[in-house]
Length: 505
Image 1 (tube, rainbow, N blue to C red):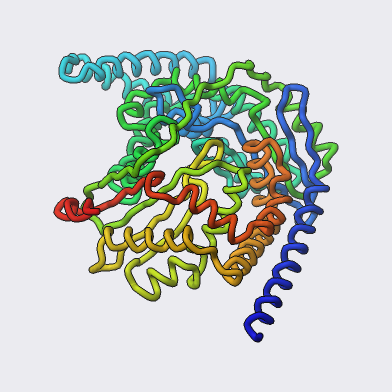
Image 2: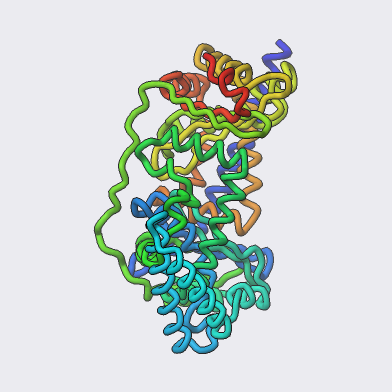
């Protein structure tokens, strides 16, 4: 009787939390002003006058999946180039600089063509061209001011200025004093319409070094790249955002211009402005500066679908590091009902010290050093993965930990989760969700992301009510449908001497 009363109380409290959170989200949704400019660009505005600041997000529905074959890494490379300035930002004499840049690109491409020949290349010519390119790059330095966009924002009170490139979306964001919105509009529209690809070959070397540090010499990076490559054998989600080394080494300015043309499609851009704003004046400024962006052609990218997986895939990555593993299962993208169910399962399995996998494998059995679950890897525009990341605790092995995880997933498939677990998970998701509504930057991020990804920013306001409707049976059915052996990919990181044992069934 006592247990039942406690459970009833928990469910009542959860219902109150959900109602309160849903009401807060619904209230925010009603205050969002959505406008579609004549060129097709979408603007979302939300006035919040807690402080005289504003968070500004620009999202492009362009990412690594939109790259041309053989030009992987171009979207991420373009993000770097977009910080190099424009003819009016960062240039001391653009007329002279433009001529010199043209020569730099010509010499650089000639050098690349010779290097591509490998052993058949003329080594003396490569040395001469390399020396000439270095000389031209040094001469170019007197024509521009490095990091001018950063300086303009910093001197005008800008904070958290950054950008990110994903498989689906590219984002540029900054927080500014509310009276600096026009400065932002001028800078962002100028670098979108008129970017100058300064320091191209220098930056390519920087990205190659970034790849070496984050992937080639990183056990986690190397394992994750191998995992995605095994899970996605047709769809470009299997290609790393930073690019494949054979593509990245010879990426050309033309490859970057190709992906930049996809940026210049107003109907694939969402701008979110959240903070202390006058919506009418803000919209006039956005229209003035971003209304010049052209509407793109109706031609769509042809992105191949990943065929259904029919058998387990395994990949072993030899690396002199502590063992670790990734297990992934193909599943649908949002707003599928199963995606909501697997969101709840993610929390049940790995959020907090009393979650199933943490309590069972880290705290109790001490098989794992760490374990986490992520629903929706690596992105959400296309069908994605329910993924588990884990490290065994010495002296336990990848194989032991892998089998223990399989056992836990089998329990989910065979028996519905308890009402206590379900209520606790929903409550935790609710609290995390409410916290995300406190920040202008978080709200600008959420609004722009869902509008761009799903075509409707209101996904955020209905999320909790959809989660609240998920039952234990919904979770069990999703687990039975997707978390099965023939649909999984397993990637193991192991030292070379342990590779044989890690591959045992």
